[in-house]
Length: 414
Image (cartoon, rainbow, N blue to C red; front, side, top):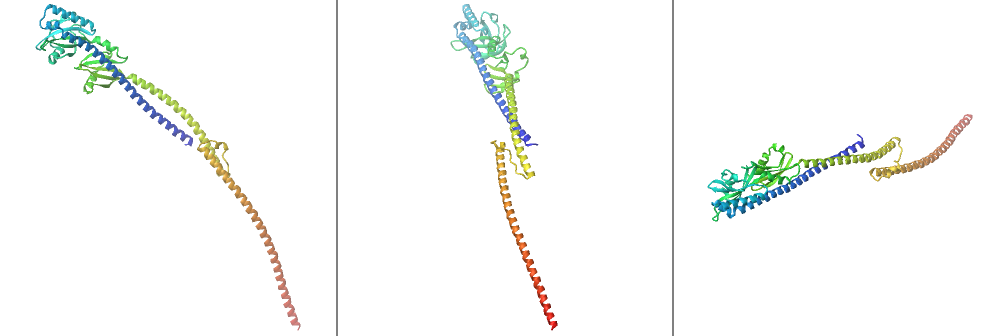
């Protein structure tokens, strides 16, 4: 594998890994922020719904408190006149017409554990004389002797799901004679709560017994049971909080008589996260491709210069020559440029050494030639002298031989 490919793989892989990690953390952070935003919005809406409920129920409670302290009401429970009864009907009817969510107002008398209707507004006179001892509000008033909001039940007149808001009526001695109960039409309340919702979200209210009494879901959505959510909230200890259910983020709040659950469609948050993720991924892909192009260009130029240096070194080793790298490669301010400069400086130094060595060899060769010439001449002179000396010796020997021969001849002659 070439150096160029290795560098591209290493740097490209590092860039991709860094971008993947960055995208992961950005997505995680975006999801957390969106969920926090959804929770915050959900909490605000639940508070708004709670305020709407409190507004209506407090208004109803206030009107019923006024009626429970009314002298005509007390006299009717104590067996008052027909005039008192008419006054009660008029007052009940006026309040009933003023508060839109009130279906009826009924005055009931307590006899032991029995609750009997003795008066009402003009729209519920058919209820007078009926026994309502089985109603939750009757049992609640008898046991608590205090204002009480019942669970859900079906209205005796309309058949709609309703709640009973009851307030005890006491005489001057503090004895509970009966109570005034306002029947709250939950279908009317549903419209007010609907206005507080967004598309894709809905509100569900359960009474203290876990019975559904207000549901803003569509008919199609109501086919999905949400009682498992109620059980899960019942196990939670907090007064309010957040849970997830299928594609929804739930915000819940417990009131004294009911639990409010707001279902926000978290799919929108996930879609937004998906859009952010897609944008980030596309941006990072573009950035990675751009960076890889830059990296490839930079690495190509870098490896090209390294290849030139390698070829020069190889050529020098083969040819035994001292070739320099082209001067244009020294202009780069990076490490390869420094390497080219240092290499050329080394080559220049070696060339200087080579020139000095050649000059020294030349001088030594000249001196050696001169010495050789002198030696040759000395040898020739020595050879000439040697020949002269040898010739002389030979003549001396011949002379000695001639002298001896003469002496012998003379001696023979004698």
